[in-house]
Image (cartoon, rainbow over all chains, first blue to last red; front, side):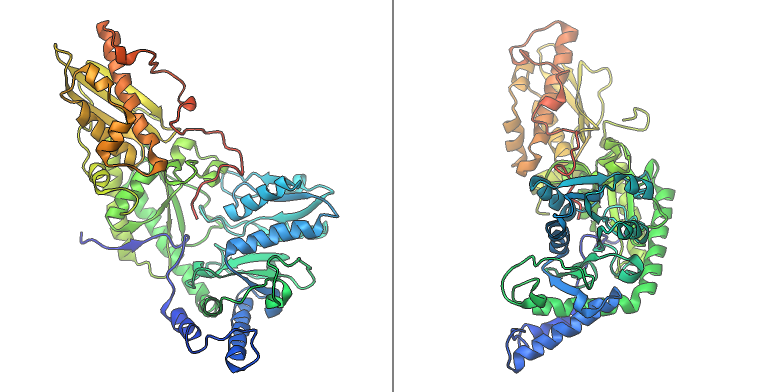
Length: 391
Length: 161
């Protein structure tokens, strides 16, 4: 087979689309103004940001004044959770989140614990979902904030946020969701979800890196997080990332226009890929439910071998993927998400995430399955563990 | 590829000495699949205490496979005493270095060699200075091998984005 370059890590980041880049470029040069300046070039910049805000708002069915641009999805998560906790601390100091959140949430939770807040990390079931009953029993008198991600970054499971938000609302608890992975892949509607706060990021939807946004429902008086000038309605100071925000707006517009087609296409590719992998490679395990899952996510364990070695050999073949293996992580810890759904640790080491996107083709997947077949066979021939020996 | 040097990548792609020696004179395993690395080494030893052949099988990451390959290369042709002198640093040097976070993988090779020789010593009733104080069944968790499966959210999290 002729060597190809196949990027299958769209959940990590996406390339900036040509239309997005074209929209951004003038804002580096001729339209470089500071949106806070009163003369023409500044006002043009201000108008461009207003337009981008409308586009991002439209994608999530919010009002433009409810969108606050940040430097990343991580910043939006930090602001929502830490800001929310500080705001509501008179009422209580208990926060609920889940064991499968992104670091942006879990490490913000750890920070809050150091500040004297109590954080409950809800378990998920074997399919990867938070159960309403589990949540209900975790809610206390002093619970002030619930944060549950809309879709998981590793296994793509889509949580029942509307149901969880309804429980939060009944009890007057602030509700946040991290929609960074969901945005652009499934409909994200803040009205239907009923959340107070929602985080998104541009670079997961073919926009630039370095720009995210926090949706803050009208009436939610979340305190400012970055202090300084009057940008973002006095709530997130600092001269705006003008080209980045413009790019986010354009990416949001494209994502909204292509959403249903994008989702159907990705799901088709994902299902085809999993069928082929199951047909060609023995002793695999598909991690997480295939129902209520992001259309472009597949997470597979290849038993008896280790994920970092798989990743390296695939990379040599031109295929780029992620793994939940401890060996590939800076902390040398295996995936906390796969652990939370009960995947045995030795099988977590052999897990690989494939995430598909707008530039993925069926030919890419055929090539990947071939490369994978060779890689798995090669590593199994080296491995000290086999089906016969067991782990 | 930036993570590893060309030598490591070459050894991962074309590892030497993969397999099992039939009727080995010594055999040892170190690590566990739970820890993410498990290396098995078997050796053939002649009447002069020279290691004439060595083979390995490794469940593990790229650097674990590369260090297994190079470690088996390094002991072939050496006497048992010489092989016992091979240190973690020797394996690392021979590989041309590993990223800091991967260094535990070469510790694995060093221990697996000792375990195979320990088995040989047990079978033959020989004693070696280099094996003094070595316990092949020592608890992996207490070494610097880097395996600690206790997960305490949110202190230990994976890095997948």
